[in-house]
Every structure is written in C-alpha cells, then in structure tokens.
Amino acid sequence: MKASDIRKLKKRIEPAYSEMFSGRVYEVGSGAVAVRNHSGEAHHTVIGVHGFLENQCYFTQLYQEPTTELILLTCSNYHIPVSGPNLERPDWVLRNPHTEATIEYDARILIQTLENLPSSNQIRVHGHSRGGGVILEAARQRPELFEDIDVVLEAPVLPQGELHALVRAILEPVSHGMWPWIVRAINSTPSSAYAQTFFGRMNPRKKTLLNRMFSATQDHLTIVRNIENIMAWMEQWDTSILANIRQGTILVPETDRILDREAMMNAARHSATSVRIVETQGTSHFITLDSESWVPSMDDIPRVA
Image 1 (cartoon, rainbow, N blue to C red):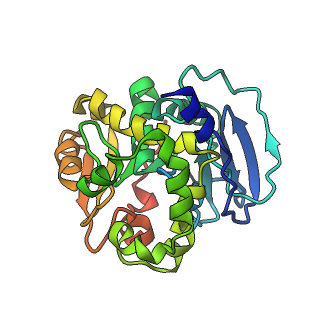
Image 2 (image 1 turned 60 degrees about the vertical axis):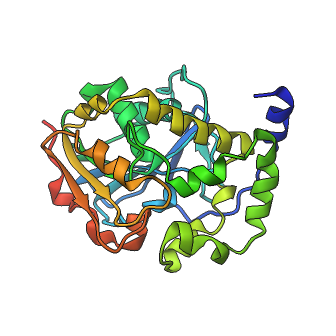
C-alpha cells in the first residue's frame, strides 16, 4: 500500500452510534473490553465478539439475564459505542505482537479477556461473522483455553470460506485511495437503498444497529485492513483448525449476501461431531437480529471444573 494511500486512509471517522452502558470498560491495546454490571453472583459468562463494521451492541439485547455476566469486545481501532466511557488500563494487558485491525490482533484481545475476566465457571464465547474468525484464531493460538467453553459461531468467517460473489464484484474495482470517497458516499445514501439486498428483511433493531455501519471504525485504514485480512485469513488456514472448538454451535443463515453460504457449509462440516451445525430459516447474515430463537439456550453451556 502506498504511503499516500495510508495517509488518506488514516483520516478519522467520527463515531455515529452509542448506547447507555452500566459497567466497566478496559482498554486492551488498540481495542477494548466492556464488562456489564450484573445482579449478584454470575451464573454464566458470555463473551461477545462483534463482526466487521459492527459493535458490541450486537449482543446487548440478546443476553439480558441479570445473572449473566456479559463481556463485550471492541475490536482494534473501532469506536467504543458507549457514552463517555471511563477507560481503565488493567495491569494484566500484555503487548500484542500482531498488526492492528487483523483477526490475529483481536484474537489476542480475546485470549487476554478469557484469561483474566470471567467470574463464573460456565462460559460461552459468541462471535458473529468476522467475530467467528476471531474466536477460531484465538482457539488456534491457545487451544487449551477452549477445552470446556461453549462456542457459538454465527454466520462465521471460516477457514476456506469466501465472500459472497456480489460483495467480491463490488470490491474488485476498488483501489485503496477510493475508500474515503466510497465511505462518504455510503454514509450520505439512505440505507434503504441497499439494506434489503445485503441485510435481508429489516426490523427496528437492525435499522438501529446497521444504519451507520461505515462509522464503526476510527479510520478508513481499519476498513481496508479488515477486508484484506479477512480474505487472507480464510485462504491461509485449512479446516483442521476447527478441531480446536470442542463443543458449541455453528449457525448458518438461510440467505447470506455477505459471505458465501455454500463455502461456509462446506467448511463447517469439518468441525467436531460435538459441534452442532444449525441451518436457520427465514434469516439473513444477521441471524441474531432476525430472530433470537436460533441462539442455543444458556442451559447448553457446560460447567468448567
């Protein structure tokens, strides 16, 4: 990438979305981890890893039980979607050797989160889209951490997966220097012009969370690095890394116009027999936002000895 392109891409994108949040927010390298307040002793811990151009709010309405400890990652160089967070800098944060805005970097944030924050012994890690790839990469780096963890991979980025053909066709002619212009054009276009094509049938929550997706990152460079790294990561790894997930669920949408559904299914079939593959009905790439009923019950979370 040319230095002139990098300079253009580093121009700051102003945040466009936030929600009220009660809890603690930790700065972890160039990302963050938020721990929501819960009532009394936590019965379960859920760690949510958002997808490309999303934020932690993807999970906040799904996991509302007062006894659930909800821990939410903000991936590197993304805006933290809470109003005026008082960032804490914990002493357990270690140097991250990976490049920012990559699946590998964000996997290291997840690893440090797993090592230091859960207070219950029943743990689920739920990742959507790119977040699924982050979970698989964390399990590849530190497989022992996932031996007794319930994993939910929702419309995930998987090894040997692909972007949807429509997305590939859009990205192919885009040079690095065009991204600032493209982002401005998208943000000035009513989402109704493209939402139905890529997001499926809309509802109030989807409209709220997906309306200004291209304002989720702190700069345009993060968008470009995310896209290039997602494609490189899918190509780099074979499906053998799925063996690091011992138990859980892979949720495959009925219609996906972000990732290639057939490639996703082919990869998912290489997972362990203890991992369920659920083909959801009436859903888009954003399964949780379409219908929460497809997400496995919290009773499915195993107890860590």
